[in-house]
Image 1 (cartoon, rainbow, N blue to C red):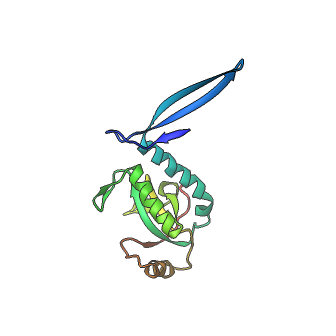
Image 2 (tube, rainbow, N blue to C red):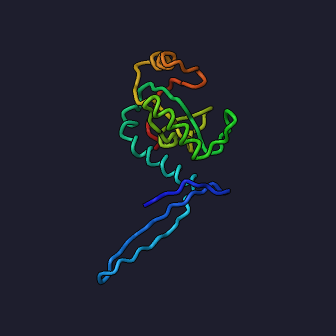
Image 3 (cartoon, rainbow, N blue to C red):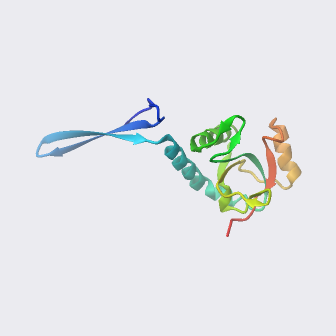
Length: 159
C-alpha cells in the first residue's frame, strides 16, 4: 500500500493499492488508484478519536474539567473557517501538547447560550478537578488565557 500526498486543485489525494495474486504458478499484479477526500478522512479520524477516548470521557462526568477548544464545521474564528481538516489539526495540536481528548458535545448535555451543543467537537484535558477554581488554575498554570481555556462542569450523557 502506497500513498501519494500530491494534491490537485480539489485538494484530494490518491492512494495506489497494489495487490498480487498467484494462479497456477503465474503472478498477476493489479494496481488501483483511489481518490481520498481529505475532509472525509479527517472526519473519519475525528470519529475514531471520539470512540477511542470515550472510556476516559465517561470518567469525567460530574467533575470540573478544562476545555481547550470547541469547534464545529462552519465555525469562523481567528480567520479560519473550520471544517473537519481544521478541527482535526486544532485538536491534534492540543492533544500533543496537553494530552487532551476529544469529546462529541452532542453525546452529552453540553450547552452554549442555552442550546445543546450538537455537532461540536470539544477538546478537553483528561483530568477532573474538585472545583471550578482548580480547573481555572490549571489554565493559569499553563499560561492559557481565559478565552483559550475554560473551566466547566462535565455534564451527563444526552438521553
